Length: 342
Image (cartoon, rainbow, N blue to C red):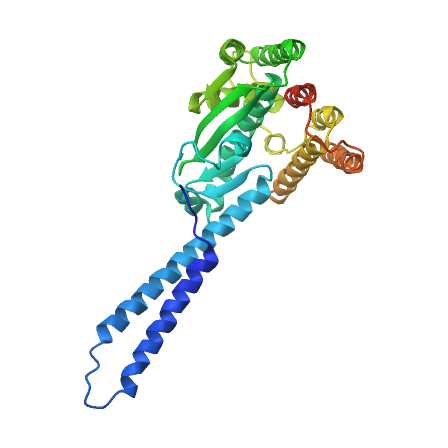
């Protein structure tokens, strides 16, 4: 089990050690003159340990600051610190199987702390992971499946390691199951337009889900979902006639940032419950923060798309009061999944 020490605990223990060492150093002065202060080496050892504890406290503070920064940039993702996948336990199985929970290697946090270039590089890698995770969620919902075990670990190089088990939802009748397959097939055909290889592999997963009612996913499947997400993103697919990525000469164009407001509008229209509306709100707010960050870095901003997103955010907030406060039905989940991928 991975446990992350609390910053405050480390700092308090370090200070206590220092105070104890100081009090112990004062004791020989209160003894008789004839008594030798034989405890000096022990006092020195305690002071050195206190300095080490304070250094660990500083490392914990830096990690906490890096985590807070990432959490602000990726509000849907939740982060903790660790060094690998831990296997099935009570924190990642059953109702606690959270697709959006990520364990980050502490060396990754060290790399991005105080280094803007490294932070920018790893932010981009996290964006790819975020898109792959969103596709995984939408695709599994479109299949009518749910995660019963899931964990993610991002290593010091920003590479994702994943393990999960999906099972067919009990509430799916034959009609809904047929609808789920139709929705998944629509998604696959959209992917096929840009990446036939990825579409074939998605179709294999679809058939396996139909046959077994269960899917076991790992690193390769998450890479596949990343390729599929890229295929569905028009901004990632500007190609020349011979299939190579088009080189954009204009610096202002290559540095532009915008929001896919049409897609957000479809997602909001499909959202029927408070949790679904809240998910769309979180996505809009994340997109707006990304645009603001791009603006600060000197990128050209598509102001029209930003205004459209802000208008959608206001509409979403007003819909929260009328949205149904319950779990979405399988049909509602599938429609929401389809809207997020089209």
